Structure formats: structure tokens, C-alpha cells
Image: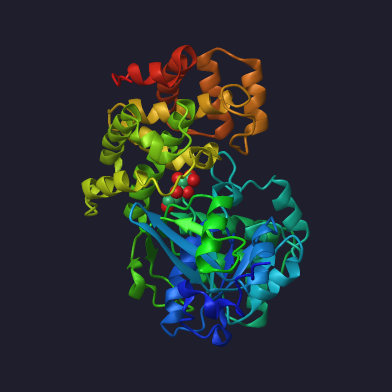
Length: 494
Ligand code: CS2
């Protein structure tokens, strides 16, 4: 049997010349949501800092749900290969920054113990949009069963909110300073958003007769939640990746991660408890991340969602294939032209250079980034990627013809599952309600409005009705003639 990647075998792995003494590393960061994105992004930046001698920033990786990552990486002492791929080839690097792995549902107490360790000064999160548990109006979904559970059982939480609140309460009681909470999910003003949700959660805890001292004001006033913009395209690992990478490194790696050469991290520099010198390794530390975040969400992620739904409906399984299709490419160019005027005009953003680079990144044939991967969770993603820019255009008296088409394409792709697309090809937290609605098959305008209601799109916005009308018009085209007709109606021939 081939040997497994681990501390014992690493010396023979050329991609992993041990660049630092892992035994000397102490934990400084707890990461919630230790999935592929974290391992290709934050963990790689931290690895560079460790190799540079900052040995007190090791990562404790926490999965809030599944044991898969821990099961794969524990026998490897947390080591895994990062494969950076483009048309020029593949560059391998073994990452050693994840020191230990915990699975929250198995042992919430162990996660709380890690979070209350005074050596932990930063908690980073990539838990995906839906795990922030926002209600349709953006406030904390206090009726969510996991929130209800965490309020009743503060010592054995399930949610990120519950873990952070209990850990902050315990640290405060023990007289150790709070950690900084660094949100790394694709949400607008992600730090401020999480901060607001955490204050809401802490208020509910206080009302439940929580930790003696009021937690809400502590979270509101004494805990830093800098916002950050994270960027790196990370396709799901395939068995072919495992086989190829294992072959190249000469030992088995149960869960390598593949990614692109590009990476970007822009962070607001508010870390009262200290931080690694990330800026030495290409991280941009700023005062206000807002413009960068909007540009990334609206241009990269917005286009990604458009490519995903149009690609799926046109039979393209990967982003590069969909993007190489002239009609989709033309659509994306027009989508960018619609979104760009909604970005801050005085922040010095170079949107032409940015979109040119995005076009190269989307064309990376070595990634095989699946459209179905991006398609999941549209109800959680579209508000910040598409709906926000569409509303901004309407407010400014401009049309959102292409932006609104992405919303319609999402609805059409959801409805196509179990028909033109396989059942469960991608998923959404609203699936039960959406399938129920599709089953009733209401007239298109009613359907568009009902989806907006379910997803909470544009709630309370004065331009909501007009946006719904745009979406409904596209939906009629999707129903009558699929993406071909919907694009043709915009003058895009295919
Ligand atoms: C993608 C993102 O799956 C998705 O929704 O749009 O994961 C995207 O690849 C990253 O945000 C890139 O930084």
C-alpha cells in the first residue's frame, strides 16, 4: 500500500521541502468551516507566515457539520497538497498551517476549549452564506431551530453564532481578551454583518438569562469584526485530482485541493489582539474594504452565477466551456457593463483591468470548475451579487436587463432539476418551498413575485416591483425557448 502524506513521510515529498519546524508552531487562529476554500486561501497565506518564522499562528480547523475533512486530514497530521493549475501546468505545494482538526457536532466542548485558549487571537470563518442564518429581512433568523437550540444550550452550540458567543463570554469571565473575528465569506460588509448578527444573538442570550454579565454590549463594543474580501477560485477536488497528485508526490493524499494561480485578500486592519504579518505575502491591509468587496461580489461572483445558470441551461458543465461559448461570453461582457456603474466611482477601482483579468481566470481550462458547484445556494448568493446592482441601476434610472436575466436563469435552472437537469444537480436552502411553488405552476408573473417573497429579494425596496417585472419577462422567454430565446430577446444571437 502506498504510504500516506504525514509528518513522517513529508521529508521525501519534493513539493514539501519542510520549510519550517511544525513541532514548534503554536495555535493562534481557530478557523470555522475548514473546507477547500479555506485550505486554498487563508491557510496558504498563514503557511507563508509560519515559514517566515511567525510560529505562533498555527490554525485549529473546525468543521461545523461533517467529519469528512478531519477524517481525511487527521491521518496526515493536517498536511495536504495545494495544486495550483493553469495552462502552463501544475505547481504543487504541501501546506502545513493546519495543526489540528475538530468536528463540532462530535465534541462542541473541544471547540469551545480551543476558542477559549488565550493563545487564540483570531477566529476566521468560511461557513458559506447560508450559515449566517439571516431572515428574509437580513436580521438574525431567531426562529431557526439551531439558534433556538443554541440559546437553550449555550454549552453545546451548533451554530457559529453560538460558539463565538459562548467563547467570548467565557473569555470575558476568565479575564482573557476577546479574539478578533475575521469573516471570510462572500457577503457585503461581511465583518460588519456578522458583528450585527452577533450582537442580536448576544441580546437574545442576555434575555435568556445568559452569562451573568451582559454579553451584547461586550460584543458590540469590545470585539473587533474587520471585514475582508477573499478571492481564489477553488473547484471541488475530484478522484482524478487525488490520483494524479498522489502519483506526483509519491505518497497518498486523501484530500488535496486544486486552485488557480490568482489569489487576493483585502482586510480591514483592526486586530487589537495582533495578527500575522500577512502584508508580507501579498495581502492588502486597508481601512475600508467596501469598494473591493462590492467589485468582487458584483463582477466576479455576479458573472460566476450568470455563467453557472446559463451554462447549466445550455449544457455546459464547466465555467471555461460556458465562457468560451460566444453568446454567454457576450452576455457576461454586457453584465459587467451593467454592474460597473453601480460601483463606487471615487475609490480608484480599475474595473477594466479587473474584468480583463476575470476573463482570463474564467478561461482557465485546467480548473474544470463545475457550473453546478457555483449554482448551489442561489437564494443566498444573488442578493449581493446581482439584486443589489439591479436595484442600484433602477434607482439611477438605468435598466437592469442583463442583471435581471441572471435571476430568471436561476429560477429556470432550479425549475429544470428533475427535468432537463438531473434531480439534486445543485441545491438551495429554499428547495422545499421552491419545488412546492414549481409544482403549483402559477403564471410567470406570480411565480417571479413568489420567488422574490421566498428569498426575501429586494424586501421593502421601492424598485422591487419593477425588478420583478424584468425577471418575469425573462422567465417567459426561458419557458418558451430556453436560454437561446432569453438571450436572443436581448439581441444576443446564438
Ligand atoms: C463562486 C465562488 O461557488 C461560487 O459561488 O462564485 O466560490 C468563487 O469561486 C469565489 O468567491 C472566488 O473567490
